[in-house]
Amino acid sequence: MPDTIDSLDAGPPELVEGIARVVEVAGAVAWLEPEQTTSCGGCAASGACGAKGLGTVANRIAARRFPLVDHPGLRVGERVVVGVRGDALVKAALTAYAVPLVTLFLGGGLAQWGWGQDATTIAGSVGGLFFGLVLARLGAGRLFASGASAPRFLRRVGQAPQTCQII
Image (cartoon, rainbow, N blue to C red):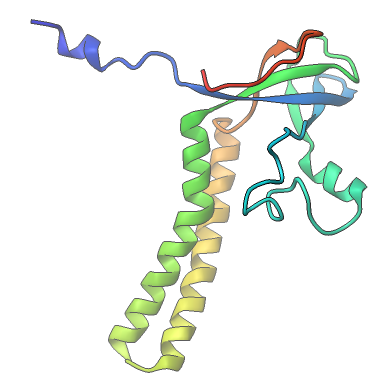
């Protein structure tokens, strides 16, 4: 009979990879910008994801920069592959989208159940949404402070074109 404890071990967490370019090195911190992939901009959310948007090009680029601490001697202009844990991405997505949505519906549902009027239902929904946004902000701060959502250096990109994958 196989050992059930060993069969539950999933191994190391999977990483979602992405290619980024080093744009600045300041002491122990390298600042990176994610490279736009060929499929980027083709989905329905492309206008809100940071790849495109309002404002100047410099504002959009600066908003997408992220720090990489304890880099292995990276230089400006180098291309690197960074990875983020898959479970951290799921937690971040649930924090950013599900929490405000659930509190919006919960606030509206409770207001409808308690008072049964459209105006109070709308007010309850808006109040629930704002409460959810505050909770999401606190949850995102916790995820950031724990370092779970921080990208990790995986390897330098070679001269040949490379693609990223889930590992």
